[in-house]
Length: 430
Image 1 (cartoon, rainbow, N blue to C red):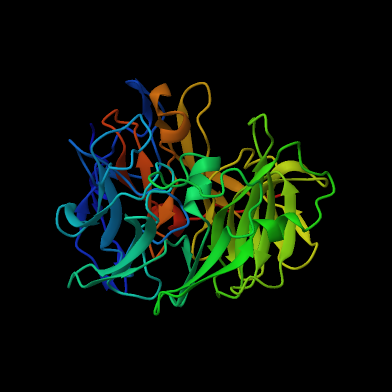
Image 2: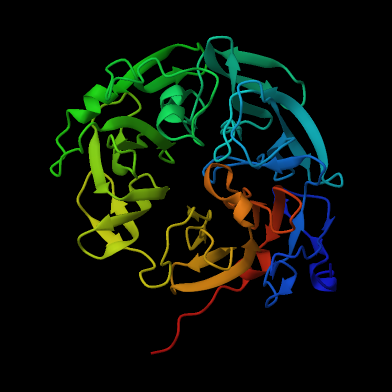
């Protein structure tokens, strides 16, 4: 493994105050099964190591604390199979100022490979984190201080937390596990497994101070909203992928279903108020990974009559829509806007070469900077695949990904993009 060169050996990360400098080593991001590729434009380094495996999961959660010093993650002792009810994993954080020291913070038996246990920092807090767990006959969540270790438990799991950290919303993880393993939690059966659209299952609103919970949108409710193409025979419905807008005034949710034959699924994307009111249909048929650009606009990989399948920017509560990166961002990926909104960080699923590209898309010019091609063996397909799910630090100058490219199992890696952001591409002269 080669060093990144004197100009890249040390990485200065600022978020209000300067952090300690860390040595950057060029991990073999641009290698596939020992076959070198072109050099990467950004230094990459592992921040976790074996014998255990580490990952964070989804791309739309707060992985870094407000200072950028502590990076959350999960630790597991196995791979390549579904979780079992008694499989406990550790939750913890990496201290990027102390030789990437792993600090254990707790454990959980409510987790999945793609989204973990919804581990994330509470928005606006300097020290509190939240994650899901199982307590006897129900799922729950813990809110814990990373330093004092003071912890309280709320008798309901969460999915997405409002920006003021006062409330959360969540689907029924039992239902999700029944309908799409890899995204829900095992250990508790879906009590409505034989009901295609139960009135007592759906999206719950949770008060994070009192622990009070309320069903705000049921599956029976959403099915009553007309869908012109209709549903296939024996369609079974569930909710997944919820996300609050940056100002907390609305949240996104996906309504999904599959027919009795069990092949594939279709999707409708909606937004609603935190009370489950003023439900607005955004797009249907194909709607995949998405992110809010601002409180009124949603970036999503979707199918639309105007331009087919591509990334679109939808204006919430209107019919306004425009393509983004058409002909450039040509495949579905886990997308996020960096803080200045001029850049989108994204990835793609592996092709025949088994490489997962992670890249930056410059919105003003439409140009792409590929940060690396991260190899993943075929053993990382399906439910326990290791998507990179790029997440960014508070100042947007560092990315963290989950990756298996070193063939040491899934681990956490940082990518320094500060030099790229400092010299954005210029528009080509006509």
